Image 1: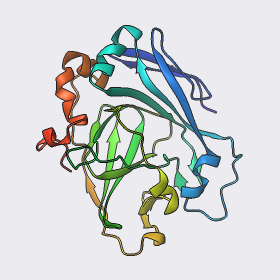
Image 2 (image 1 turned 180 degrees about the vertical axis):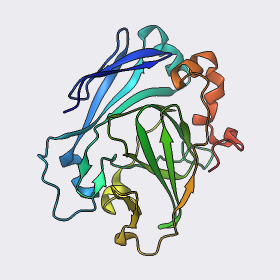
Image 3 (image 1 turned 120 degrees about the vertical axis):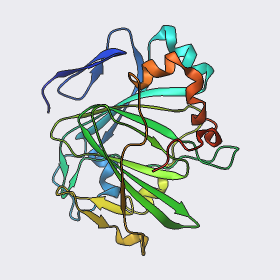
Image 4 (image 1 turned 90 degrees about the vertical axis):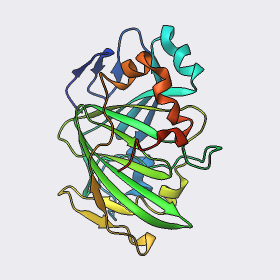
Length: 250
């Protein structure tokens, strides 16, 4: 349980309850939740940490928009989401997301995604898989105000490395469903991030490249929501990754 708190952003005041539930006047969203039971298959520790299966690890608020502005996102086939992650440990690991890949666009590259930290600290773990092997693994640390484009053809896991809840927004195409099966089948990402910051290889992958570290690769003017409303066409690359050009390189 965490104390209720507020996150002030140019686009809204977000109120987070002690159960990680989000409320914000004038906004609608579709809520989803991930519990300890949902993530057991991707954790490093065996035996499992002693947490009830229904312990809430994070909540997702998809299509988080004002009704009057929702059509602008829908017209571009884009989705604005908010995710709130608890500050707890899963054995030797900080709290993390399940991990997922995006499918390919008609251009032959997978759909990118952009994140913006609204509160807290995160480590993003990105991995590129080619012909069944991991060919690149990148760790990116981000703090409040930082933003990151997940480049095409990279799967990703988000880790809450702070001592308070992590609140992040994202913009992503609404034309696909994320694919979680690869992470579940392999028991997590190619590397596990431990509480002390060490990256430990996941033996199920066999030989993997040495992790490399990168800085956040994107700048927001205000926040993703406000920036989209100011320039919807500026985010066309989320459905057409060839338009990224040099943007999003790590």
